[in-house]
Length: 140
Image (cartoon, rainbow, N blue to C red; front, side, top):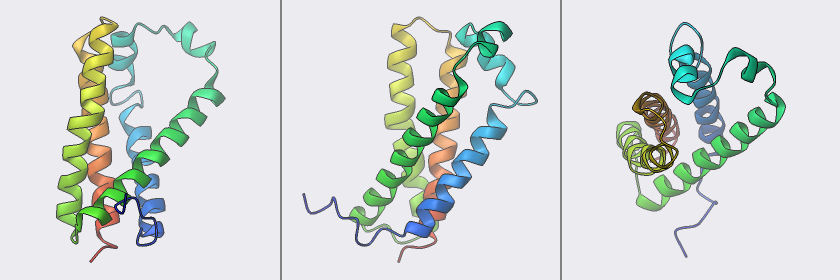
């Protein structure tokens, strides 16, 4: 598995890409944008949100997001991507194929409405495209 090589990963790009995805997510899931629509789509009430274990949810989000951005960087290096725009496109393609695809599977099986799938899928695609663009600035 020669492609699984962390030596050429631009770690500053990974950190900045992760921060960008965090900022995008904070805005995306804020009340002025898509929080209320997402909340209705997944069936969470305000009371459910108050009773949620937010430290656990936040911790899982951080770990999952960081792993995704690191994996994106490793793949960009392995594929020889050497520009920000090609890295952004690769991030978007991976977002659609893997993240949005997973939402389609899980939300479909859980019989969630399509609104949740679209909100989460577009978010993940935009976030990975942004992270790719940022990482791509450090490649080549």
